[in-house]
Length: 162
Image 1 (cartoon, rainbow, N blue to C red):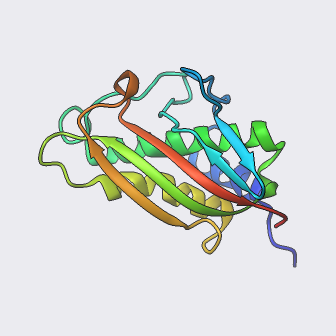
Image 2: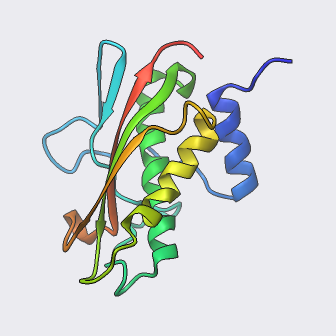
């Protein structure tokens, strides 16, 4: 039996959860959403934009619950996948997740940034598999993010064949 491709796993996850892959984000400044160098793909920070095209804004631990922050991290992760697909042609070119760095707009005293970023981490584990979809990760809390976004996430991926 052949294993599923990254594209097949993504399609199954989207079907099971009811989420949808957003259009690739347009840069909000002078940068590229994805840069490929040798066998690595680096993404710029992606903000959480939902299926209706609305940015998920707010401060986790104040305006947003930890669960709402986690959902924002899922949307940021979906944005990363959309940008990767636009750059690479499809997600089957991704061999593994190397690193996720996430910033969470956090209220004073909120310490659940790792739980918020689990939304993106769990998405990547579903799409790229339990071994290749989990890399190293850093979570930061910050008082403010661009455009008032709840989270901003960037990632590094190893490219190759599945």
